Length: 342
Image (tube, rainbow, N blue to C red):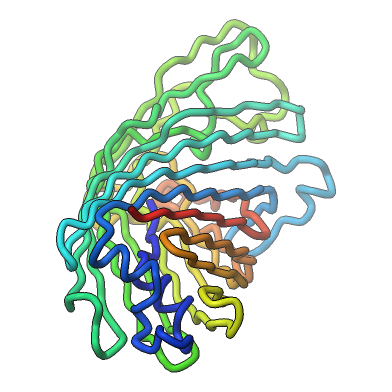
C-alpha cells in the first residue's frame, strides 16, 4: 500500500516561483501528464533495516546488548503504470517486488523471501480540472488490492521446513480496498501538500501451510525468527499519512527541496471485519528531508524519513492473553523514485 504524489504535485513543488511556472502547474511534468501525455511509468524503491525492539513506546535496548534482537532487512521495488484518460481521471496498476532477510541473532537463524507482492489496480480523480487557476487541488483515489503475493513462504532450517515470519511474507492472502487522497496548495516560493491512504482488509485470518517438522525446535523459542506450527495470522488493515513543504530552488529550474512528516502503521482493530489471529500493531512517526527534480518528461525524487517516535501497541490477542508483544522498527527509511511520462 502506498500514497504516491502524482505529477501535478511534483510539478507544483518543482516549479513554484520559477519564471514560466507562476501557476504552480505549468512545469514540464504537469503540462505533459495533464494534457499531451497519456501514460506514466514509475519505479519506486524502499529500503529499511528494522532491528530496534519496542514494547509500547519503550525501546528494549537490552536486546541489542544481549544479542537477542531480530533484524529485518527489506528491499522493496514498486512498479506502476498510470493512464491519464481525461484531465481529471487516471487509472493505475502497480506491482511490488520485494526481497527481505530476517536474522535471529540469538541463534544465528536466517530466513528470507523474494518475489512479487500483492498487486493493486485503481483510479484517481481530481476535484478541479487541472491546471487549477487557484494553484491548489484535491485528488481522491481508490484501488483494489489483489492477493497475488505468496502468503505461505517457507524456508529450510536444518531438517525442518518452516513458514517464515508474518513480517516477511510476500502477501497476506486478503483482497482489500484502499482509499487515498492528495491535497496541495502552491504558493509563491513553496508548496504545501499532504497525502494519505488507508487499506481495508476485511478478511479475518490466514493459516499458513507448508510446515514439515523433522527435528525438535532449536533453542531460543520466541527468538527463532519464524512462526510456530499452527500459528494463525491476522489479516490487518494498514495506513499512511504524510504532510510537508516543498521549496523551489532558483537554479537549476525544476529542482525542489522537501521536508515531510509521515505516520505509518497497522491498527490493533480493523474498521471492517474481526481482528483474530496474530498481528503486530503499531506505528512509526518520521520526519525527513528530500528532493525532487523534474526535467522534460522525467521526474526523480528521494527522501530519508527519520524515526522520531515508534510504538508497538497492544493487539487484541495481547489483551486477551495478558501479555504485550514487541516489534522491531527501523531508525530511518530510504525512499527513491523515478517517473517518465509519454
